[in-house]
Image 1 (cartoon, rainbow, N blue to C red):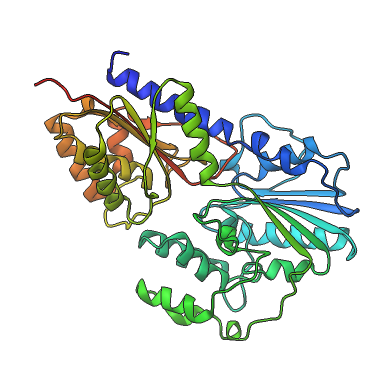
Image 2: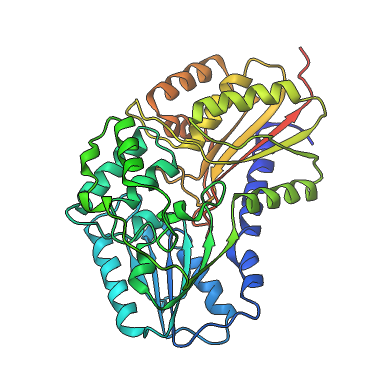
Length: 419
């Protein structure tokens, strides 16, 4: 094909969209529901960015409907069309507020009053639950949790650090929801947005044993220059929690997304190689790592490279952007002085990259001019990658995707340009 920016951009975006579609719960969830039976009467509680899509698939594939259904998500994570009769509890994300507490308390009270102790709760859990479902542990307030969450994010804390702290500020995280619902049987189906699939960090592990300690939370807060005394003293005494009534099943993760991406790439007639490392750490540093690896290992042309994971950004400027936009911009700045033909893209699979309306961004070698390069360098300094990519028409929009499986990076690399 003629390797223009438009063609490269279309190829990259088609791969992204199709990979996301193939990773939707409609594709991944039904096999886990075959032959499943639930102890009646049972309630359905679904929490997270993918709460609605998971709930719809569950309700479409089970023979015996739940006595009660509670779907906790935010209006940001709703498709344009859906079953309007579904009981939605709209909460707040990425920072919890009073509405979060009201929704969480209301849902818990409804479940406890409706589902008897001999019943069951089916929990459909996806990333974003840490903010969407929250009740503070006294004397902590929801404003405290929101402020601490925002500061940790801006300082570049990773998801494990962030959720370690959250668990010790919460009355429902770190396995505490399991204690609240005990002895009702809990069967959790989980869409993992945590690399390594450690259950206690997905949505801060509401029904999973907590292996972290208050000391761990205090140490993290101290590391980032925050007040460690915010951790309540009662956290020092860990309550006994019985988890014998809880079973968990992971239905999809970042590996699901990447494997589907590889299949899509092959189906489109391109050879594919996977990056030998995950996207992690500071986005700009990861971008440099990716670019240097691509330069060293590009030898077969054309080739599409794919990688997954999730980076973070330490905010120092006053611009607007997301981790994938910063990642892509840094890769571009590293590749722009090579003579390779290239196009790169990265997105958050939930359809939103940072505090923006875009899922991520793309850029190719043809887009880079001396002026654009200078703009890009300044955009990284200002954490203003969204403005940069909007100016060059490089933003990727997916809208509501129905999944939350971390991020995807893809690169199209072809033969060197003639000088």
